[in-house]
Image (cartoon, rainbow, N blue to C red; front, side, top):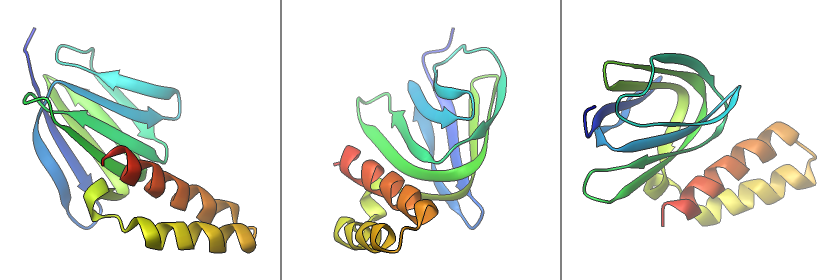
Length: 125
């Protein structure tokens, strides 16, 4: 079993993050999944939620992911997201305002999107 897996987190418009990891946790339609080196091959549908990547150096990368697919084989993990942004790219104050506006307008979809971004931003700090 390899000690690391190669991860590529790609959004529709850009490569968000790429590198080596020891563990990746993501939310799928079947529930949360943790992928480590040597995991069985998988293909799944991503749900909106934070993705947590543990690096071999002991660091953590967190991203807000909204929809897409997850694929793993031969210690290569691909997260192909409709929309994704790293936690340090997220303006917490702006997202809190978006969440308040979505609640005031009773917009459930906007509330979920803002909540995912806020959870990712605060988890990564």
